[in-house]
Image 1 (cartoon, helix red, strand yellow):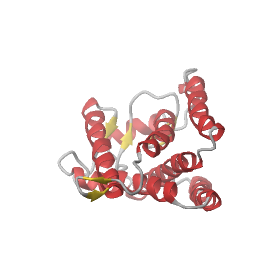
Image 2 (image 1 turned 90 degrees about the vertical axis):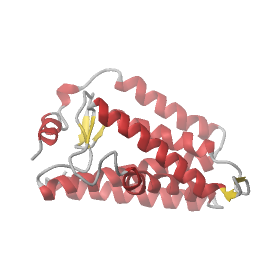
Image 3 (image 1 turned 60 degrees about the horizontal axis):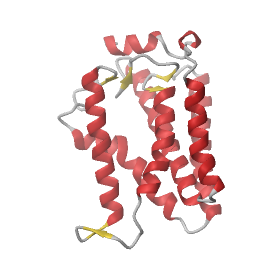
Length: 208
């Protein structure tokens, strides 16, 4: 087991780490989504939840990598946190991704708009994914986001983008562009339900 993984485990789901700033952060996340509900902006509302749900899926398989290798997760969150949910996910990161989904959906241009002569959806996915990788590299250099596998490093940004972020923004685009609100709700509910089942099953087995 790597030193980074050992450090992250020290605070995993430790209630003694709780900080009161979590409460206003939670209220801010609720406000962001309530604002979209008030406007009946279901495209953005469900697209935001879709990204958040896909992030939970990523965090679950990342925790499983750590469990089965007994060495390190693909990425670890070892910095100070009010609550460490999984080895690569703390409460602050989870709130951040919840808001990121809404922000990303709001940045989507009209479907027919072209960027540099290309359809805007693939450009949107790649630009946002690479921007997120850039932020991750900075967090890694700051020592709060750890990478212990040789193939998941700053010198392989495309790998990080393809596995770590492209699925997020594809989810935003797909759910945002679905024609019916009911279909959006069903897709997002399925993603979140799958995450919940994985958390319950793998958590009860002690794999997370």
